[in-house]
Structure formats: C-alpha cells, structure tokens
Length: 127
Image (cartoon, rainbow, N blue to C red; front, side):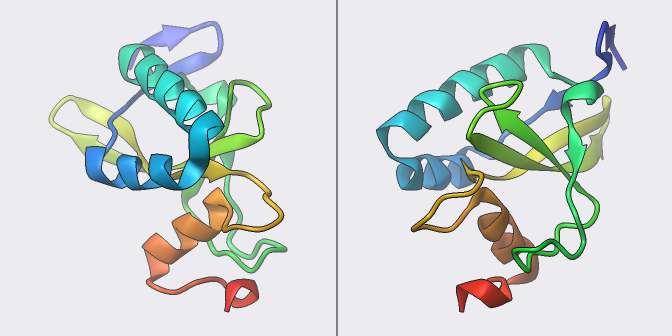
C-alpha cells in the first residue's frame, strides 16, 4: 500500500451508476464537488488520516458500522462520501457506498442514503 505524509493511502474505486444517482440528487454544487472528488480520489487515492469511522448507532438512527466517511471538499466540507473497505487482486481499496450532503435540512443525508443502501430501509427518523 502506498504511503504519504498522512499515512497509508487507499485506492478508491467508484461504481459509476451508483455515483451518478447520487450526483443527480446532489444538485449543481454537489455535482461539482462530487466530480472533482472522484477525479482526485481515483487518481491519487485517500490517506487513512482523512478517514473517520462511521457509527453503529448514530444520533440520526443510522447504522453504518464498519464503514468510513470522508468530508468533501477535503478536509472539512459540507459534502461527504461513505465508503466500504474491500479487496481486489491488487490489495485493499475503498468503494463509495453513498455521496451527498452531510447534514441537510430537507433531504436525505449521505448517511441516510448509505444506511438505506446497506440495510434496504431508511433510518427510523426518515420513515
């Protein structure tokens, strides 16, 4: 695994269809942030130091245990990616589960979307 000043660097592999769905939901500003982030992450990966673990029982009723989050634009933006750790023939990598706003007032957050994709239902607060 490559190393940088921020520690080990994980490769990132996007699922094009899932990411396009998230970009469509994100609006004009979100599409700009998302596309720039995808280009940067696919080209250079992400240092482990920029990742934070997701919670299993978050205040917003999401359960994202075992996943990590990345704020966009790096390092403290209002947008985010929730990522899953996987492995391919080249070693460990991260695959985005969801992209979106971190804490919007009137639409599902990136965490709500990730919860829905992972568990097949919306968090309790979204019902």
